[in-house]
Length: 267
Image (cartoon, rainbow, N blue to C red; front, side, top):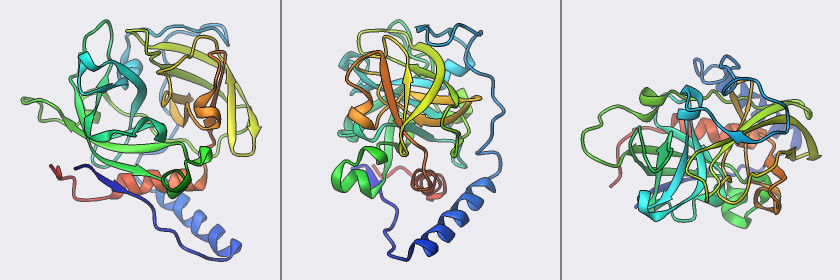
């Protein structure tokens, strides 16, 4: 059984909550290189708002498809490797993890092949807002993974690398989205400026980001600034997609997932 972790709910006055949020951000910043904007964007520059196949480079290798059981089960969502002390953490949309016990992650998946192997989920981290009421503002989740087959002894981040996490982005930040439509066997890539649909939701105009791209990383300067999801589950038309803003709560969830120890496999 996969263990699930939720941050503790703590009542308090708004000013006290603000102080706690500030301490969380300071603590995450101190987590040696986990946050930052030091990675190149995926692939060569292309016109904003144009979607095409992502090149098979190191950045795309950190993004993968989520499958039901194995490569024969079909892929239904997207996830990406993020930096963590355990080197074993992925990020995706919370609504992608309804069945974590049978979900496997294939980083760099392309043309029916999993060049970096399959990775099973061992622990899942969701915010109480999603667990209790599927709040679209909490539609981001993290999970630790371990090799699904024998032979691999390294952690996933040691195999493909990982993205730092970049909360507190401006409303009009330009991001690159990398994701797998369920009908495609290679990831698609689109970069464009975003806008705030609401104070808690970000939107982007990119064509062809259809079903299966939920959980796709939104990369600002090469760092994770959100995942495709949130409002309308990420959007009801392929041309417009959404992401919950990386709030203090999401940052705290990332910290919780990064710092939980030990990294043993509960199964």
